[in-house]
Figure 1 (tube, helix red, strand yellow):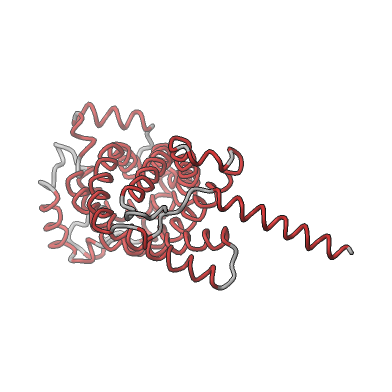
Figure 2: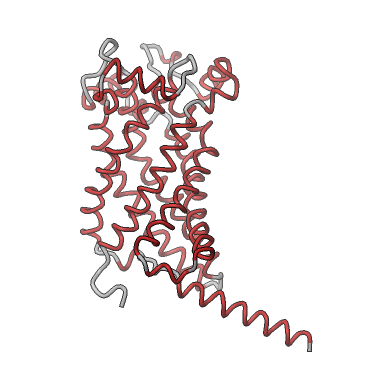
Length: 330
């Protein structure tokens, strides 16, 4: 008798869960996308978003590289006083030129992996929420690895352009920086910090996308899945979920990202022995300000990543719906 009650409770719980899943907004997967529209519109949308968020990235980079600790507001004021508004967009051309192909690689790897892993997990009997989280995590890892092939050289070049000033101008632009870094350090110089980038961003992306998927389900459960029919509500939930995932990711990955930025930006003056290593960079940071130095620039990075995550994801979800093939939601 008691087993029958348990079975009925389990069946009832499963029915409620299935009903919740059915009422959640429909996911636009890889097979439903018009790929040409997806990549062309994606390049345009994300270029605009990158332009809006770039000044925060410049401030964050200055905070990590400058030895004496400074407040973010003081750093921003110094850049404005020294370089004007132009100072907040140093290296933007090089960054944008690399961001478009990097984003294309990222989106393709993310969606293709999510679709294949999610389908395989469901076929193996994994519950839909768990399959969604696993697929999102796997997609985040593959996307991070694919994109870093392009993003690491772009980071190295754009960050060096960010931190130079009119009085210490070594590079005349992205192409000049590319040539000089290649001449001084070879291809290895352009990929300085590549391994650390993978170690930082692969698990970070896995946690971020899995957290985003789970946060969405949690928030919809609070506000009511029936509100997903309203597009403003849909965007608000996606933005809030992304901001939560982005803020948490910023805190977790901050020390590794600070070390990576230092390694990529520090110059080498000829001798191979002068090249910064992981050990020497960490030792230098700890000597400057202890473990707190590893979190220098956390405020701008936390704000930038939360805002960036909310903006990027709402843009990305909007992009996927714009790029869906005819009849995808029928």
